[in-house]
Image (cartoon, rainbow, N blue to C red; front, side, top):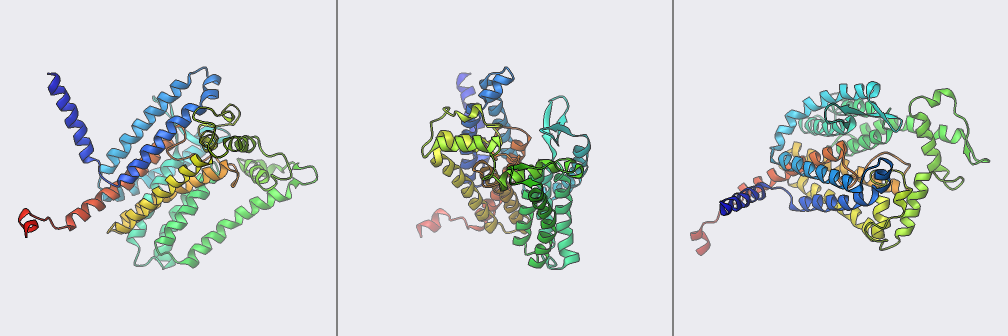
Length: 415
């Protein structure tokens, strides 16, 4: 009986391994980043555990559960033929619109923003913008692949693809401007690669620059350089999160003329202490003072513990991920798969770059997390789903390449 149970285990493990296809380098990147996530989250949740009277081991176990669930999502998503995602894209896109509207008016308010819906029974907060981003890029890939013949035409080609982008970004922006900007920028890159007219893209960028210019203008207008602080804003600019946006822009623009924000200050201290090789795993000191060291500012903790060498390694891993996805795009024989793998990879890598830029004070403070590294949540699971879809494209590309190679028989090889 014991031998039979061992054989069953070996068979089940062997069947899973044999069915795991796709780009092996991307699989390795997922494993590396999730292992780094375990170390970073376990090291940075001490203060949070103390405040909530929990143990750091409980957060470590929670992260392990999220990683296990995420890997399962990647595995099962990569087994699905990616052409099926083309059909699902329309349903997800249509469903994401009322979800975003509901979140704006009735969503759970966390950190002064309605970005989440609390799911009943499991009591898990679900960020609807994560679903909307995934649905948008799937839908956008579908539309681009179908409209390649008339993509240069403004009415027949460009409007049907830019309309969904403006709609989703417009619904995300009131609660999460940074995510809306990153989603919009990624969409424009994908449209550029999809052969959209440059003059049409420049027109969209010009229109988007108007509210951004107004935001920067208000930040300058209501900043008192003599006193080194912001002047009181008129009531019309204190609605929603406009006041938060203005103050974040002011903190970034006038960092040399005032005391920098507490988050930025502590992140700089963490990076300075890390130096070249870091303080070592689990030896972070800034984790006790830096807000959200396990999510928004996890990269600063990584640099503190593993030094600039560790921070550079994380950066190179994301760039390698992007390179492998571009490689998949070039090999994919169908436009939908090419756009899908490229769009999803761009959104993950650009999000990672934005998070790292915030941590090293190259970008105003935002609420974006570091994909696959920050503490698990709905964003972590949607990241895994996106990677699973990319691997689905890679698996089918490998299958197509395998079928294209003629099988050599023993007799042929002897000749």
